[in-house]
Length: 263
Image 1 (cartoon, one colour):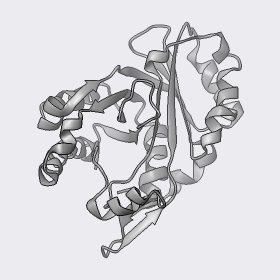
Image 2: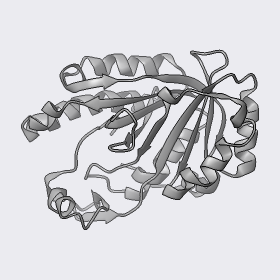
Image 3: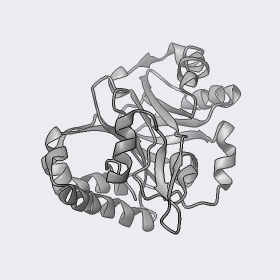
Image 4: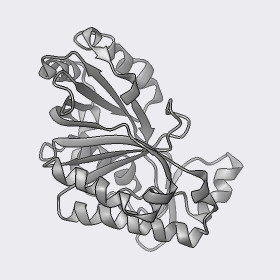
């Protein structure tokens, strides 16, 4: 479900409280519980002072990483690079080395736009590998969906004090908007949790991608009309808006042929 920013279902809570089992959870087609201890980490770094975004893609391609390079629609010299990996170490080793090398090293970072999060399950996915790894890679690297809007958000603590059924109702309304846009091939999403990983203490990151920019803006507009967004979000943004000049699944090329739904 697009933009379904929910918490784990009640059945998952005791295991999480124990601190022993951190696997992501879903259900098989016949309703049996299942789990998978895999997730994709995704990071966005933004820069200005770039006259040739294509060179960044060439460097990333040569490094063999998976990711996307965007040229900014908000800054004529602006760019962003998204990288992804299941390995925590990637972001302080190979990923770091890439960003410290030319042509990235000559650019001016925009740290206020840095985003870093992890994929997560919400408890009903029948294809956990698809939901946690394959679908996000497919979504980010689909050449038919070059436009993107990336932003972090923080949910107020008051949301957690709402009755669970009311939480579900609000999230169903929220997710239903995203699902309608996705089924119409107008907007698709990458949803990430970033608790403890974000400098500004955001809770989630949303990446909206599609063929055109206008529908992505329309999703954000429609979401703002929901009770979840209007009453319970403390902060939304800043936003990075751009169009891809390079996309590659890199080591995750296998994800492009994964046949599960990801839901």
